[in-house]
Image 1: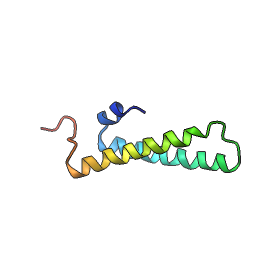
Image 2: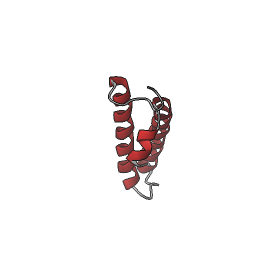
Image 3: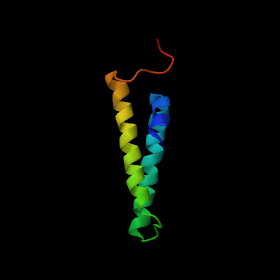
Image 4: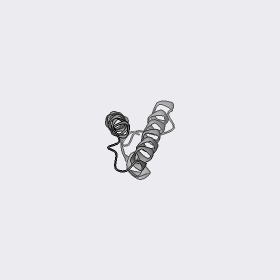
Length: 71
């Protein structure tokens, strides 16, 4: 997911996306342990996306990022 898409999401959507990505990461790690993972680079990209989502959530909580539509 591109960074520009993450900036358009609000904190609730980011929370849902974070949970989905964490579950996907767990599944990829399970596949890797069973040696069924076809593309191990997926883990790298998913970890990076999780970090970006966590950063965006932290920016909302610190007041660095404003909620879209708020004045």
